[in-house]
Image (tube, rainbow, N blue to C red; front, side, top):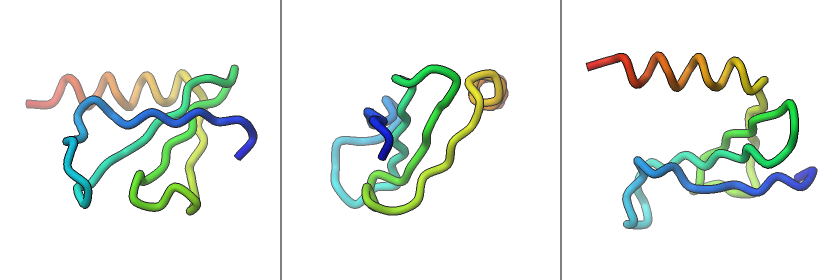
Amino acid sequence: MLGYKFVKSSYSGGNSGQECVEVARNLPHTVAVRDSKHPGGPYLTVAPAAWDAFTADLRRRP
């Protein structure tokens, strides 16, 4: 997977079977996101600025 080092979201619980997101920010100019239940499956890549805008919007929501 091009050297992505995925890390589970801090919002994901420790129990298996939960909806978990993993994010890789270790490569320049790219953020990769995948479902932790399907580590070999597809992943989405976005620009860091787009990811930052997305997560900032989530933090603003009640």
